[in-house]
Image 1 (spheres, rainbow, N blue to C red):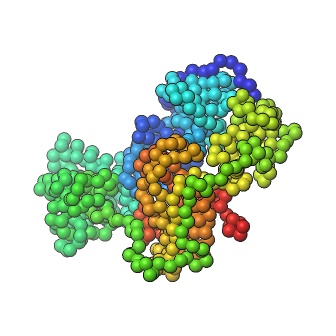
Image 2: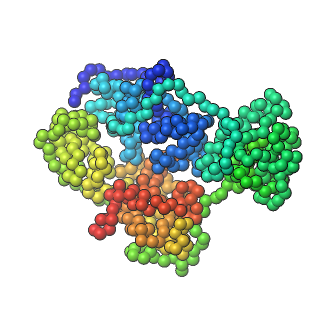
Image 3: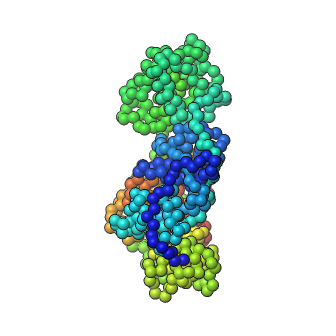
Length: 605
């Protein structure tokens, strides 16, 4: 469908709040390290809104709706997102848009990143692109939004005006974002009234509750400066006072010190308050923690503090810092040493290391010379499609033009024997696309002789990846994983050295780094564990385990990263989420391998 008219240079739509009696689309967003507000998906926003209706001061566990967001919790009271394994805090906001805009219709605009996956645009940019698309502008200049990009709708591409580099973009339909009407819920102070029951001691609740208490501690500190001697007894935890009035904490040989408890109506003694306020100063933390040993009363949460022994700089452990603030505010808390993950098994002698039963060999290597040269792109596309003489009047989901018209890549590609109006149907799944669009998609990928349907992800041929050269070792060790006490353990060791990127990588000719190698991973030695190992060996041979991209952990680019097949790197605990016990892990990784085209049928072949 040709787009008429001039291009568009559009400003960002206003993000202010409309009148209270109008319906609004709600989009929850988080602030990234570059100062840009990034939208959560529509499914996540629906989940947050449902929790908000239940408790406007509660917490939202994002992993309940999106497995990839498992480490994250949103505290609605402080409007912050917390990452539980690192303590990283990021502001979140609840933004509102017109129901007729892109989020109200469930339209998502995305650009293709260096890992060949799709990244959604910021919401204001998404709305601006959709507005220009609906007005049939042939192009859009994003410079008014602070970005040096041009959007070309005919080729569905984004071009950097400075470097002239082009990327694909796409428009896809998703769940519409939630609608709301009425006033915005006001935040409420925490805690409100007296709590009942014993506080939850799970790590997520401790994290959120300690953060709330931190903000209260700051407020309490300000009140003490304005009204000396008027500090009130906290009602954070139930069960009345922790110790009888007029008595101190019982003596004992507990490892930690709890914040002193006081009877109803009693103020915090100035000496105790002075000592507690010193807890957040480096050098005094250890003395305060060990100077008054006491047993921890029931119901008082134990918050982990890193570097409790006072050595080295204070690590930004969220739970630890907020625990200190709770003490400063007179709230009962116990400072403990943060548990450390058990990453490796006990030492194993060479004589105890055995081959894995039913698996040939103990080592696999990949080298550059194992790369296979495929047929021409045109031959690959023709191999997997059947030509359609009378295509339906539907959108081609690659170029977003109608199948009955020419491909959006007309003029961009000029292959021999493939006309822009030709339409093909993929053999297994039956989805239809312009042949020219499939050719453009193939040329932008790994060019390994395989195709992957962009709609249902069905794989045609043998999919291979861009994993750099390295070595994979696997063997049996005489130790058991948590949850698999009756089985020995399969240990996998991946080792990839630094090197130079090849033509299939994001920046050919540029050096790439390989951090954290060798990487040790673990599987239980049972029937399913051995099946997973065999499939991982196939995935390794096809170069699917790792790729070169940007690290989600450190933000470093041009480095070796995992490639969507999760591994367990924590041997004796599960503090990071990458360990055991995890009863669903083996089934989950089998599904991830299947998504890469590695199935049990592969083993039979």
